[in-house]
Image (cartoon, rainbow, N blue to C red):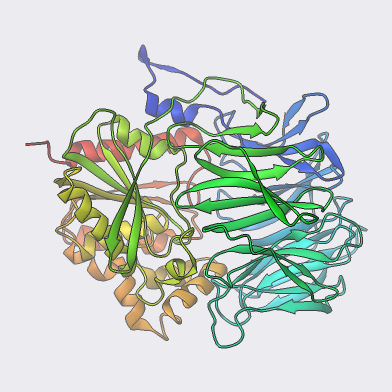
Length: 607
């Protein structure tokens, strides 16, 4: 790895801690090749841009695989370890083609000649690194899935549908292909189908049938053994995500019934005899081993915090990416060692997170609070709203909130209805009244923050990125008296225009959330669109947007900005040449600095 540009000096002054956190080199959990476990692939920002790296564990050599101005994070290491596939789009627009490169280095080549550029919809590689199942999504075709056999012949289309779908996994021997699909029209809850390489169906599983169309399934992976027809899947039959084993040849389903209170995911141990269980509950996570022979759980010791990824190695050890709000992420192992420690300066820590539970209109709301050490309220307070919406904030390290804390702000993060990790009903609750339900929960936590003495009601900032940016603009329009400033990154601002311009997979999600297209349910799109309420906005507004963003496209942002300009509203806009966020460290630092400066200039001083 090339060492980071690290701790630079600016006009003779030390770089502040908040900037050090962004500049400090960090790494993802390394993926490893099933048939060549010493070969790994990971992502790092070591050069100042997030790129893919190959790592030969036997020699210790690390090599940068990709080098693009706007960075690269989408890569897959073939099971045989000979090839690395990576997705090549244009400046973050997520529309492109797969390329591949030998693990040991060499020129890139188009991985599947004959497939036009598209949005990616999953990839599963055969053991030779040339055979592949490729999912594609376009406005014209919907979703198509193709099989490339690696012999140089044209890829064969094995699946096509207008609704969203994706590649789940390819069996160890290449004879079975698992896909997730939403042919029933509910993009939030997938059904499963297992295909042969010729596209014929082996088995199907659809929990959306039977009258209740709110149960989803997900592919977790085929058993890593030749001829084994067991498929590990996730289901929601008891109101939360849990794993079960489905033998696609016999139809037998083995429900593990783990009796853990939160969401549970799993992956196979390399010999197929056990599962590595990741249990997430109330913004934290833990690991277990489940042995099929004993049908029991054994806890794997990890520190309190969040495990954002884990993998079982052939020697039985487990490597995992761990973090907490106070401590930066690290790749650890159950052997007790740090697996991958990037060179360069280490990131400063931050303050721990505090849990708050607030009674809301739809049930108890979990919020996470950070504030400067020793600070007494009322404080200027930032409500930093997560994206998704099907995501959640956790007890994990985040440089953005830490920057606000460094500048004297309290930070509140709300796991509103729509968030994951609190059961299926909580996640699915926002349908039809999209945006408005989430804001009800945020308002309840805001009320707690003010009445508890934490937050100064005259110095409240609503902010977030993506869906969090959308909720920011919707919030300052529908709750104009509640917020002092609004700072929105890559937001939905004009829901109707966003629908027509966004990538096809998000159109399907919007149809699910709102119950149809803008032409079919115009009143719902109008009620949920920030543009509807733009003339009610009183707070100064800061907006940042990527000009190549396929998720929250730039045209709909410009429509909102024009309305602000027409009424002379206080606002600032920053446009940057990338997509839905930036993978360039300097660019990310610039964006945070602009947000901090906007707050400094527009937030009232304390009385």
